[in-house]
Amino acid sequence: MLGEYGLAPAAAETWAAAAMARFMTLRHRVAPHPEVEPLLAALAERYRLASITNGNVDVHRLALGRFFPVAIAAGEMLAPKPDPRPFLAALGRLGASPAQALHVGDSWREDVEPALRLGMQVAWISPHRDDEPPLPQRVHHLAHVRELPTLLTHLTGRPHPPAEAGA
Image 1 (tube, one colour):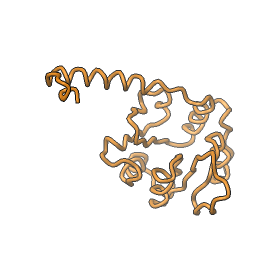
Image 2: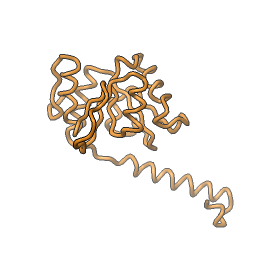
Image 3: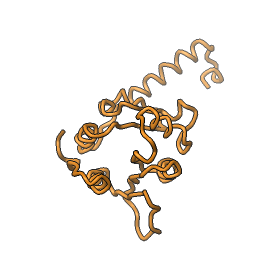
Image 4: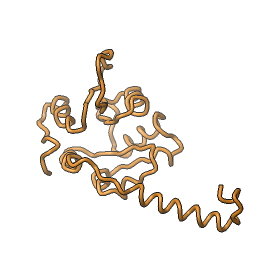
């Protein structure tokens, strides 16, 4: 686009690279909810965690990235969610079958549907769920991520620390 506005190709490439570098720096300035770090720390003690994103974020550039031994940037695979390939790649890198995995996501189309098709359990985080039809089997509605330990206790029969607890 910069070339279309009259910049020479080398200058356009330089300015575009600088703009993207600045964008990526700003993109990685995120402040998670206070309960997220202790929750991930507690989960990482019991489970291998993976991150799958369609976004343009490098999870390992974030402070929370240390909890995710597997991070899939679906766009870089040219297979954004709901394509099953990022899910299969994460499962493969974790050495897990779909039946052994719980996918946690907030998008019905990009998280719930593909994970269900693969045979995974799903924790669907959505603050709004009024008098809608019953959820399919293996889909568990959470109004907030802080409800995840309770769901895991229910699914595994083992107590999990609440999100507010430290690791």
